[in-house]
Image (cartoon, rainbow, N blue to C red; front, top):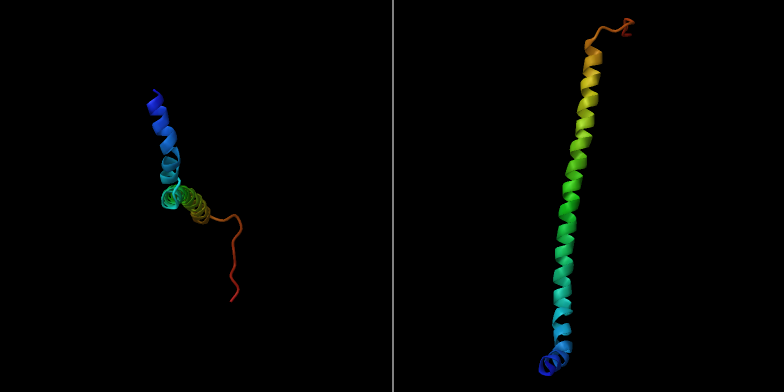
Length: 78
């Protein structure tokens, strides 16, 4: 047991240096940025889909209102 502890204690600094090297930190940050942007893209697609759905609904209502006869006749001046 003492040998195992001595081994880990001696190599702890080397172990931490390899894990916390600049290259590994850059790789982890890059992966996190990719994940963040992919999630943001999915959310923006959902928001765009909902927004276009609202626009289509409003356009349909406008078409229905235009298709029904108006209460007052409209005149166009030329």
